[in-house]
Each structure stands twice: as C-alpha cells, then as structure tokens.
Length: 415
Image (tube, rainbow, N blue to C red; front, side, top):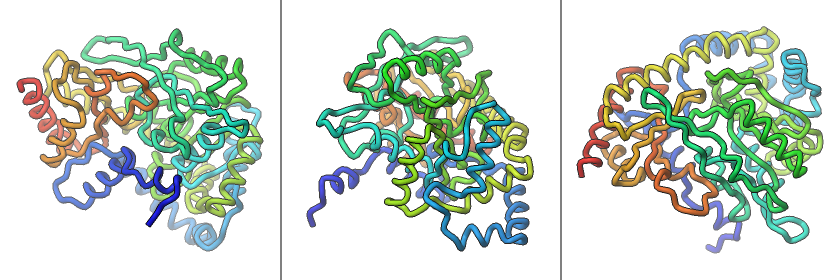
C-alpha cells in the first residue's frame, strides 16, 4: 500500500504517540507507576461534583440533548456565550461569542492553528512558529503538515536556592523576521511547570505586534480555569492574542474540548476547519462547562479545590525527590504550575532516553526530556539530561517511583 505524503508524515511513531501509548498501557498494567502521561488527578471533590452534575443534567435533559444532537461547527452556543460573558465580567476583556471557537480537544486546536499559519505559504515561501524557549509541549512537535515549521531558542537558566532552577526567555537571542508566522508559548509550561512572567508576556506581545503576527498562549493549565498556576501573574488576552484553553485539567480529559479565544478572522477560520474536518466539536464537555458557569462553580472550584490540591501535591513531590536524590548535580525546575515536575540531572552520563528505558523496565513510566526540545538547530547536552514527571499519583505510588528513579540515576552516575 502506498501512502500519500500526508500519510507518510502522520504515520510516524512520534513522541506524543509514545506518551499516550505508555499512558494507556500503564493504566492496564497492574503495579505500573504512572509518572509519565498528562492524565489529571482523580480529585475526590471534583469526581463528586461531576457525579452530581451528571445527575442534574440527566434529570433536566441537558445531558441527553448534548449526546443526541450536533452543535454547530463553532461549538455549543450557550457555552460560548456564557464563556464570553464570564471573561468580560471577570477581566473586562472586549470579547463576544464571535471571539471563541471550540475544538475536539486542544491538540486538535493546535493542529488547526499551526497549519493555518505556518508551513508553505500561498506565495511559495515557508514560515515557522517561534517557540521563545525550549523545552516546550511535546504535542507540538509533529503537528505540522509540512516539515520544519518550528524554531526555538535555549533559555536562560537561573539557579535558585534549595536545589531549584528556573527558565527565562533569552530575548537577546530571539530573531523575528519575515519567516516567522506566529509566536507560541505555553503558560504554565508543559513540561517544566515554568510560568512566563508578566514582563515576558508583554515583551512577546510587543514583538508579535511589531511584526504583525499573532501571539499564541497555550493556557491549558492556566487562569482562570483550571487555575493550576502558583505564580503571582495576570491572565493576558487582546485582539492579537490567540488564547487556547481546555476542559481536560478540570478533570474532564475524556470529553475532548479545546477552546480558542482570538480575533474573528482566526475563530472564523477555526469554525470553518471544524466543519470540514469533524462537522462539529463534541457537545458533552461544553454542556458540563456551561452547567458549571450557570451554577457559579467553574472559577470557584478551580480556585478553591483544583489549585490547592495540585500545589500541595507539587510541594510533596519536591520533598520526596530531594530526600531520595541528594546528588548536587540534581535540580528541579521551580514548580509554578501545571501537573509536572521537570528534573535536571546535570552531567548525566547517559541520555534521558536511556534512563527512560531503564525505568520503564522496572515499571516506572516517565517521559524523556529529548522530546520537548522542539525546533532546536544545534545539539545541547541539557536536552539529554532532563525528565518530565507527573506528580498526581498518591504518595505511596509516588514514593515507590521516586525510589526507583533515585536508584537508576545513582547507577547511571556511578557507571
């Protein structure tokens, strides 16, 4: 069988495919220690809430209506209108329902956006998405229909007290010219838990406006929901910003609902692409989220339940890691948000891919750092010294996994 050029491109076994395969295999494997994938925690309060919401929505017909009917290609009208009103009232943004388009998960949304803006242009030129710093989200890497649509830069590394460090955008390195179609950054960052400062965001916005290109902010973990963000920063949006959100980290990854907030030219394009590619986005997630807005629970639960749960889990995971791994070459990126810790083993004599394989053989699933350095033109030792660790497991499983990580890292350094 002969595949098309598109078929050959997307028939590759990519980093994001490996991550999701590991997640699926781990869930089916008794005793597997799941420190890899991005599945959110099963927060008891949230599970109880969704159970109660399901009962109410089943009783009043909302759930059956969502299951039994198509929405339009923009997404559920009631949710889109309620969300626009929420942002107007909460932040004073000049936004209406015309500025919002839903997708079948944020991964689909980014596929649409990257290929809408980057790659081969109508005039024959080739444009790229600028990632201001790497590491960045693994799911971006293979999302281009055309090859080579990303360029990224190494960050400044600030060494902090207590075995922590933090990445910053190195603005002196950044080059924005006619080959750049958009600037894109996640905030908080998956995989590192880094949060771009308000100053960094404003500088990126200024750069984008100067070059008449959009600034894309991946806000899957950010403000105002699910609010898994521990740094003291402000949400950001304007008519040159494409803000991408998700319902997954509320605890609803299975409903596959992404949210794109942008100017009307972008949201109209996203809506048209929805119609062609998938008819319409899923109705179930927006029905739940609309229910939460109507009850006044969406922001309240994000602030009072979800954020403190993850913040406590992150602090506990750092404690367990630092107790288990005392080598001075080991550092953790300052946990400022998202549901991961980024572990740096300086001078590691094996690659993080090799360390991943050793850990997987012992039943610990984690993600090697190499996959996250997207768009790098030169090799960098640091890219082979890091692991992404999901910290949502209970303390007992996390302790077991960390003990095995400590043992394998010690063997690697000794060897």
